[in-house]
Amino acid sequence: MFLTQVFKKGLLATLSLIMCTQACAASVQLVEKKRFEIENFKTFGGKTIKQVQVGWESYGTLNQAKDNVVLITHYFSATSHAAGKYHPDDATPGYWNAIIGPSKAIDTDKYFVLSVDTLANLNAYDPNVITTGPASINPDTGKHYGLTFPVVTIRDFVNVQKTLLESLGVTKLHAVVGGSMGSMQALDWATAYPEWVPRMISVIGSGQSDAWTTALLEKWAVPIQLDANWKSGDYYNSTPPSQGLTAALIFITQDALTPTFFNKTGEGIGYFALEDAPLNDIRQQHSIVKWLKERAQSRAKLMDANHLLYLVRASQLYMAGHSGDMKQALSSVKAKTLFLPSFNDLLLMPYLAKDAANSLEQHHKNTTYRELTGDLGHLNGVVGIEQAASDISAFLADK
Image 1 (tube, helix red, strand yellow):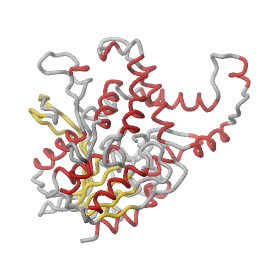
Image 2 (image 1 turned 135 degrees about the vertical axis):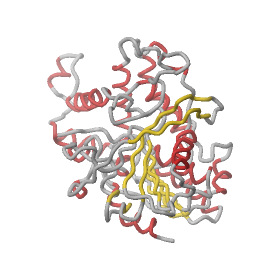
Image 3 (image 1 turned 30 degrees about the vertical axis):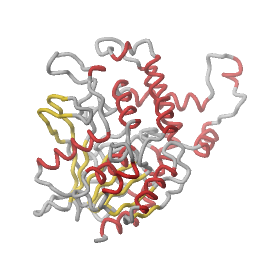
Image 4 (image 1 turned 60 degrees about the horizontal axis):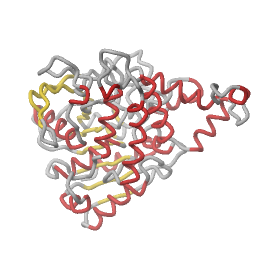
């Protein structure tokens, strides 16, 4: 759901940390991270978090009427860095740079495009991320929150975004567009605040976390909880649970891709079943496993294990509308909607988006459903998003 920061170089340069396809590389806009603070934020669960801080980025210009805002809601392992670069010499631009920018599908000559770091953002130690979560200092105690940080939900991410938008004088969006965990936020926006949202695009998304998806997500949490260094979340003044976090990222990577992709990768690095090293020593690993582990270890350096647990829980708790009945909650949607699942997604399988789209159709809503293609499974919605550029552009332009 949630992964694109899989590869940085080499054989799979097309899947670098914050991926841009070759077609988007010609010119890149420079952006800056901004800080937004909320003195007291009340969660969906009724708890109060003091001195919330999140980062945000924007592209384009807010018009005088303040009605040209396209909100980008990001996926599990991403940040608000959806497009552009912080510095001209950055290795890669934001993850959806292929479709966000001047004359692109989400045209920054027309729209004011804005994205916000989530609460408990996974990349807690990235200097370009501003977030409040378990790794933050509790102002009441002067210590890291750890697991005393309140459980947060997709609705809480939405409400932080709404508070930021209101601080800018915005009272209605032009559209909300999100991929994976971002699609959950996008659909929840349309359900919770229908007067705000005339257009909603869900990429590689779902309407709720069903039993299968909730159990799959728990698999990501278990390695962290089994790491002796986790210490029930109280590790901030000691050795962090890096092995557990790395194992979780290995699971996330494989879940987000496909057998076709892995087998092609194996061919490129010389994988075969009877490799000498694992044949002769139980402590040695196959080349494909080493390849996967090395990338997970590299990514883990900027991430926090507790934050991953909180994002897993937020995703598990997701149901559009955050009520007892997704299908009934979707009756409140006023937006026209576009669903773009990936046909071979093994993480958020296409039936999840189809179920939400069908429910909206049953309520006689204006809904379109089209599947993305490619060998990348879930990541067709990030790395391969440019294939939907014309659909997205037309959808946003349609009155």
